[in-house]
Length: 253
Ligand SMILES: [Zn+2]
Image 1 (cartoon, rainbow, N blue to C red):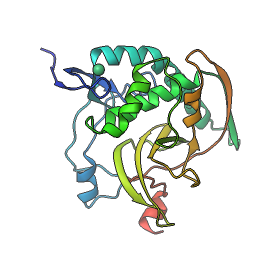
Image 2 (image 1 turned 45 degrees about the vertical axis):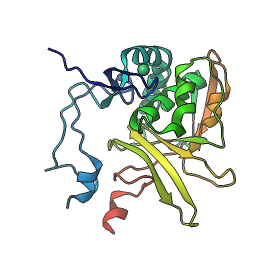
Image 3 (image 1 turned 180 degrees about the vertical axis):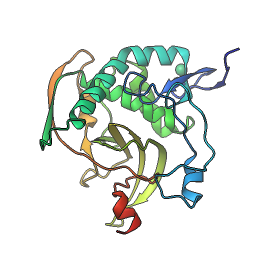
Image 4 (image 1 turned 120 degrees about the vertical axis):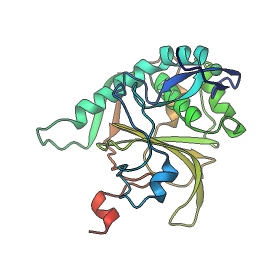
């Protein structure tokens, strides 16, 4: 008998049977079995920050994800947005996997629907955050209505980076103190080869980590473009938010 999980859907907030939501989508290199551990257990262990050995894990045969979204929301978001996300992730994988030693400063993607892509990212942030956090309600509505355009940039800033690291993390909103003593609240998703940071109520004058893709939300659903962006590659070796230190930097070499 298949597993039945009843809960509050991270998008429509109705209490329903929840489906397993691949985060990122399955076609975005997320079909292999995974053994996730809880961040608290990893942080409290004596392991190096990227080592999960000896820590109790779940066994996810289908890839990384959560039971977070009801069947209706799952099929509409996956069908409407997942393909663009997966195509983009596979293009970045191809790019990062090049072994010819060529150094690039930027990347060009031939075809992308920016709105569909960012709606997939927004859906993932809804999945990994508390469903009763009303601060994300605008984000939920943005995802649920495929034709909804625009995100309030005083509320949300979504940034992206690329990574070679295979350290996956889902970090719900948490406060961070920047070097300038500014306190910001961020949620982060890192899944090879893409990472995303969502800043809540960002300071419009501050610079934040990653490539700002919030304006992807301003295009129509069917708008397709050629995209050029800087090659913003970061290492992910710890469960802490915005921690892009190399392994050597973490161990103090
Ligand atoms: Zn739903």
